[in-house]
Structure formats: C-alpha cells, structure tokens
Image (tube, rainbow, N blue to C red; front, side, top):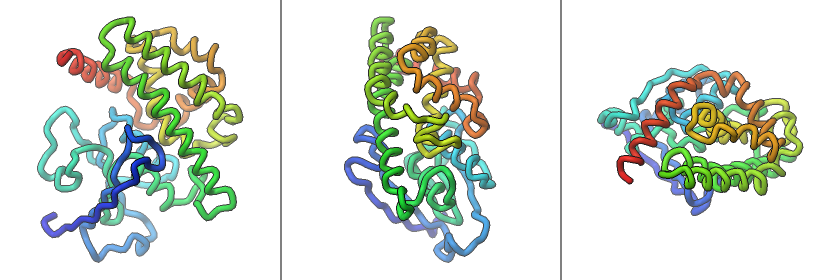
Length: 273
C-alpha cells in the first residue's frame, strides 16, 4: 500500500442524492496504476462491509441485483479500525470497494458507480432517452426520504430521551411521508416509478425502510407504526412491504443483529445525555 496515491473530487454543496446533511466527497485512490477498469471482462471486486450497517447494505443490494461476484472483508465497527483498513479508507467507514484496483468510498457513490459501470434495470444511463428525467426523480425521492423522514426516524430510535420526544419524532416522520414521499409512490408497481423490479431508489432507501419496520416490531419505535402507515400512507406501506420481501434486500439482512446494534447505539446516546 505504500506506493498508492490519491485523487480527491469534492462534491458540490448538494450532491446527487442528499441534502447538506448527507453531503459526501468522492474519494478514489489507485492501488496499481497499471490497472485499467475496462481491461478485464470480469470485474475484480472486494467489498469492505459490516452487515449491520444500513449504508453498507446499499452496496450489498446493488451487487445482488447486478449479480456481481464479490469478495467480502468484514469490518468490526465496534472497535478501532486497523491501520491496514485506514490506509484503504482513512475515514474508517463502510462500505468501501476495491474495483479492479480502484478504491471507492461512500455508500451512495459506491452504489451509483456499480450501477453505472454495469448498466441494468436499476438506473438508466444519462444518455438514454428518459435517463436524465428518471435519474432526477430517483435523486429527488432519495433526498425527500432522507431529509423529511429518516432524519426523524433516526432521532426517534437513537436520540429521543422521553416517550414524548419519541412520539413527536415519529409524528414528524409520518408527516414527511404523507407530504413528501406518498405522492411519489402513487405509481409504484410495486417498486419506484412503476417498475416491477428493484430500482436505484430502493437501493438507496430500502436499508432504512426495512430497519424502520424491524424497529417497530422490536419496540425501538412505537409498535403501532406499521398499522398507522398502512392507514395514513397506503402507497408507502405497500412499497415498504414489497421491499421487505425482496431477495436482494434480505440477502445479508439479519434482523436480530440489526436490532441489537441499534440498541447499542441508542445506549451510547443515552449515556451521553
């Protein structure tokens, strides 16, 4: 690793899929300068991941939908990162992929890179007839869910200290679904934008939706939340149910492990309150 060099491309203030809260930087570093990504018929992919992490889950869903073989390296997020991993990703986060010698980090960037490198049903190319419009719709959908829903769900699960705070955060999340997300799913069939297959919208958001359902099931969120969503946001509820049964979403999803990880994170926030 001593011979690697880096190229950093800083994203604009508002990146393709998230508002400022989720603004990321594209970071790629070449391990072997002789490697050409297009020179191999079969991509050589190593994924550094943790199966409890929703952001890493995005990479797993993408890889499963694309049918790409991958070597996995599990990163323990509960311990300090090894010097070896910090050489690969100085932030110490997951996911990271090494794709034909290129290091690519940050979950939305990893997923989009894979989808663009291997054209499929997930995401049309920007050069396709309706590609730019579809990509814009996916970007807006992901932005809406991340900022108007997930921000409140995260608060309810991890940071709310009282039942009143939990209920208020959940109310805010449901209001965000009603106003921002529900109208965007009116033509889901059962997936985004009338698709009968998973799309890039699900790649980005499914890890958080399935965790919402699991959190309600295990009492990390109000247990009546699913029935409330079914009543108040029927489009979203049907879409969420389709997501929660999809093989690519479920491939590495371990509900018990995810719930236990969420409880540990919540306990850490509580100890600092």
